[in-house]
Amino acid sequence: MKIICIGRNYSEHIRELKNETPEEPVIFIKPDSAVLRNNSPFFIPAFTQEVHYEVEVFVKIKKHGKAIPEKFAATYYDEVGLGIDFTARDLQNHSKTKGLPWEKAKGFDHSAVIGKTFPKSEFQLDNQEFSLKKNGVLVQQGNTRDMIYSIDAIIAYVSQFFTLKKGDLIFTGTPSGVGPVQAGDQLEGFLGNHSAFRFDIR
Image 1: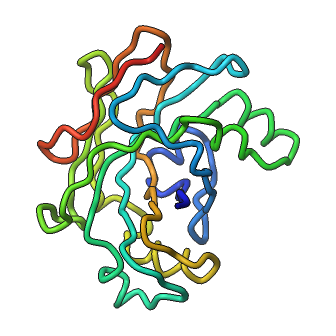
Image 2: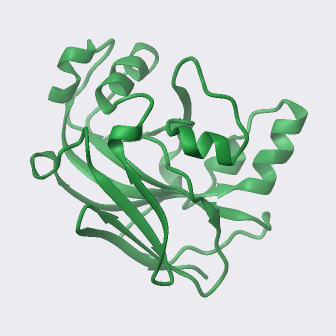
Protein backbone atom coordinates (compact mmCIF):
# COMPACT_ATOMS: atom_id res chain seq x y z
CA MET A 1 0.00 0.00 0.00
CA LYS A 2 0.98 3.61 -0.42
CA ILE A 3 -0.23 6.76 1.29
CA ILE A 4 -0.81 9.66 -1.06
CA CYS A 5 -1.20 13.00 0.66
CA ILE A 6 -2.53 16.33 -0.58
CA GLY A 7 -1.00 19.52 0.78
CA ARG A 8 -2.44 23.03 0.86
CA ASN A 9 -6.05 21.99 0.27
CA TYR A 10 -7.66 24.34 2.81
CA SER A 11 -7.31 28.10 2.38
CA GLU A 12 -7.10 28.91 6.10
CA HIS A 13 -4.27 26.42 6.56
CA ILE A 14 -2.43 27.93 3.59
CA ARG A 15 -2.67 31.34 5.23
CA GLU A 16 -1.56 30.17 8.67
CA LEU A 17 1.66 28.73 7.19
CA LYS A 18 2.08 31.72 4.85
CA ASN A 19 2.14 29.53 1.74
CA GLU A 20 0.90 30.26 -1.75
CA THR A 21 -2.40 28.82 -2.99
CA PRO A 22 -1.52 26.06 -5.48
CA GLU A 23 -2.71 26.08 -9.07
CA GLU A 24 -3.09 22.29 -8.90
CA PRO A 25 -3.11 19.72 -6.07
CA VAL A 26 0.17 19.42 -4.15
CA ILE A 27 1.11 15.75 -3.83
CA PHE A 28 3.53 13.95 -1.56
CA ILE A 29 3.77 10.30 -0.55
CA LYS A 30 4.40 8.54 2.73
CA PRO A 31 5.82 4.99 2.70
CA ASP A 32 4.03 2.08 4.35
CA SER A 33 6.55 2.27 7.21
CA ALA A 34 4.91 5.58 8.17
CA VAL A 35 1.68 3.85 9.24
CA LEU A 36 0.66 3.92 12.91
CA ARG A 37 -2.52 1.98 13.71
CA ASN A 38 -4.64 0.67 16.57
CA ASN A 39 -4.26 3.76 18.76
CA SER A 40 -0.63 2.86 19.41
CA PRO A 41 1.38 5.64 21.07
CA PHE A 42 3.41 8.00 18.92
CA PHE A 43 7.00 8.43 20.03
CA ILE A 44 8.54 11.78 19.10
CA PRO A 45 11.68 11.01 17.08
CA ALA A 46 15.04 12.30 18.25
CA PHE A 47 15.83 14.12 14.99
CA THR A 48 13.18 16.82 15.40
CA GLN A 49 12.33 19.45 17.98
CA GLU A 50 9.00 20.46 16.43
CA VAL A 51 6.47 17.80 15.45
CA HIS A 52 3.08 19.17 14.36
CA TYR A 53 -0.25 17.35 14.15
CA GLU A 54 -2.40 17.73 11.02
CA VAL A 55 -5.79 16.01 11.11
CA GLU A 56 -7.08 14.81 7.74
CA VAL A 57 -9.95 12.91 6.18
CA PHE A 58 -8.72 9.97 4.13
CA VAL A 59 -10.32 7.53 1.71
CA LYS A 60 -9.33 3.91 1.14
CA ILE A 61 -9.06 2.79 -2.47
CA LYS A 62 -10.93 -0.43 -3.21
CA LYS A 63 -9.79 -1.34 -6.72
CA HIS A 64 -7.07 -0.84 -9.29
CA GLY A 65 -7.32 2.37 -11.29
CA LYS A 66 -5.31 4.56 -13.65
CA ALA A 67 -6.28 7.90 -15.28
CA ILE A 68 -9.68 7.78 -13.60
CA PRO A 69 -12.27 10.28 -14.91
CA GLU A 70 -13.62 12.44 -12.09
CA LYS A 71 -17.18 11.35 -12.79
CA PHE A 72 -16.19 7.74 -11.96
CA ALA A 73 -13.89 8.50 -9.00
CA ALA A 74 -16.55 7.79 -6.37
CA THR A 75 -16.68 4.15 -7.51
CA TYR A 76 -13.07 3.63 -6.41
CA TYR A 77 -13.67 3.94 -2.65
CA ASP A 78 -16.29 2.76 -0.17
CA GLU A 79 -14.48 3.54 3.08
CA VAL A 80 -13.52 6.83 4.69
CA GLY A 81 -11.56 7.58 7.83
CA LEU A 82 -9.60 10.14 9.79
CA GLY A 83 -5.87 10.24 10.36
CA ILE A 84 -2.95 12.40 11.38
CA ASP A 85 -0.23 13.60 9.04
CA PHE A 86 2.60 14.21 11.51
CA THR A 87 5.11 16.74 10.21
CA ALA A 88 8.60 17.50 11.48
CA ARG A 89 8.08 21.21 10.90
CA ASP A 90 11.65 22.24 11.68
CA LEU A 91 13.02 19.79 9.11
CA GLN A 92 10.41 20.85 6.58
CA ASN A 93 11.15 24.56 7.00
CA HIS A 94 14.90 23.95 6.70
CA SER A 95 14.41 21.97 3.49
CA LYS A 96 12.15 24.65 2.05
CA THR A 97 14.73 27.37 2.63
CA LYS A 98 17.28 25.27 0.74
CA GLY A 99 14.86 24.46 -2.08
CA LEU A 100 15.18 20.76 -1.24
CA PRO A 101 12.56 17.98 -1.05
CA TRP A 102 11.02 17.53 2.37
CA GLU A 103 10.05 13.83 2.38
CA LYS A 104 12.00 13.17 5.57
CA ALA A 105 9.84 15.75 7.33
CA LYS A 106 6.64 14.01 6.23
CA GLY A 107 7.41 10.35 5.60
CA PHE A 108 9.34 9.30 8.69
CA ASP A 109 8.37 6.17 10.62
CA HIS A 110 4.88 6.31 12.20
CA SER A 111 4.11 9.76 10.78
CA ALA A 112 0.77 8.59 9.32
CA VAL A 113 -1.76 7.78 12.01
CA ILE A 114 -4.61 5.68 10.59
CA GLY A 115 -7.84 5.76 12.55
CA LYS A 116 -10.96 3.66 12.14
CA THR A 117 -12.54 3.43 8.72
CA PHE A 118 -16.29 3.76 8.16
CA PRO A 119 -18.64 3.13 5.24
CA LYS A 120 -18.75 6.30 3.17
CA SER A 121 -22.52 5.91 2.98
CA GLU A 122 -22.71 7.10 6.60
CA PHE A 123 -21.36 10.53 5.71
CA GLN A 124 -21.90 13.49 3.40
CA LEU A 125 -18.40 13.71 2.04
CA ASP A 126 -19.01 17.00 0.24
CA ASN A 127 -20.13 18.59 3.53
CA GLN A 128 -18.60 16.59 6.37
CA GLU A 129 -17.36 18.03 9.64
CA PHE A 130 -14.29 16.62 11.37
CA SER A 131 -12.19 17.73 14.32
CA LEU A 132 -9.20 17.09 16.55
CA LYS A 133 -8.84 17.49 20.31
CA LYS A 134 -5.53 17.74 22.13
CA ASN A 135 -5.81 16.89 25.82
CA GLY A 136 -9.57 17.33 25.56
CA VAL A 137 -9.35 20.81 24.02
CA LEU A 138 -10.54 21.42 20.45
CA VAL A 139 -7.56 22.45 18.30
CA GLN A 140 -8.70 21.74 14.74
CA GLN A 141 -12.14 21.83 13.19
CA GLY A 142 -12.84 21.47 9.49
CA ASN A 143 -15.46 20.69 6.91
CA THR A 144 -14.82 18.94 3.61
CA ARG A 145 -16.90 21.59 1.80
CA ASP A 146 -13.95 23.95 2.35
CA MET A 147 -11.48 21.81 0.41
CA ILE A 148 -10.03 23.54 -2.63
CA TYR A 149 -10.01 20.20 -4.46
CA SER A 150 -12.77 17.67 -3.75
CA ILE A 151 -12.11 14.02 -3.01
CA ASP A 152 -13.21 12.94 -6.47
CA ALA A 153 -11.12 15.65 -8.14
CA ILE A 154 -8.10 14.51 -6.13
CA ILE A 155 -8.54 10.88 -7.18
CA ALA A 156 -8.85 11.88 -10.83
CA TYR A 157 -5.76 14.08 -10.63
CA VAL A 158 -3.56 11.71 -8.63
CA SER A 159 -4.41 8.73 -10.84
CA GLN A 160 -2.92 10.50 -13.84
CA PHE A 161 0.53 10.06 -12.26
CA PHE A 162 0.23 7.08 -9.92
CA THR A 163 -1.68 3.86 -10.49
CA LEU A 164 -4.04 3.42 -7.56
CA LYS A 165 -4.25 -0.05 -6.02
CA LYS A 166 -6.58 -1.71 -3.57
CA GLY A 167 -5.71 -0.65 -0.03
CA ASP A 168 -4.01 2.63 -0.97
CA LEU A 169 -4.95 5.60 1.20
CA ILE A 170 -5.42 9.18 0.09
CA PHE A 171 -5.11 11.89 2.74
CA THR A 172 -7.05 14.94 1.56
CA GLY A 173 -5.45 17.84 3.42
CA THR A 174 -5.73 19.57 6.78
CA PRO A 175 -7.65 22.65 7.93
CA SER A 176 -6.16 25.45 10.01
CA GLY A 177 -5.13 24.97 13.63
CA VAL A 178 -2.06 22.75 13.22
CA GLY A 179 0.35 22.84 16.10
CA PRO A 180 3.04 21.05 18.10
CA VAL A 181 2.84 17.98 20.28
CA GLN A 182 4.93 17.03 23.26
CA ALA A 183 5.34 13.94 25.41
CA GLY A 184 2.31 13.48 27.65
CA ASP A 185 -0.24 14.85 25.17
CA GLN A 186 -3.24 12.88 23.98
CA LEU A 187 -4.89 13.33 20.57
CA GLU A 188 -8.45 12.32 19.71
CA GLY A 189 -10.01 12.73 16.27
CA PHE A 190 -13.67 12.82 15.29
CA LEU A 191 -15.31 12.27 11.92
CA GLY A 192 -18.65 13.89 12.57
CA ASN A 193 -19.70 12.43 15.91
CA HIS A 194 -17.66 9.25 15.45
CA SER A 195 -14.44 8.92 17.44
CA ALA A 196 -11.86 7.74 14.90
CA PHE A 197 -8.73 7.54 17.06
CA ARG A 198 -7.35 8.39 20.48
CA PHE A 199 -3.71 7.87 21.32
CA ASP A 200 -0.88 9.19 23.47
CA ILE A 201 2.29 11.09 22.61
CA ARG A 202 5.47 9.87 24.26
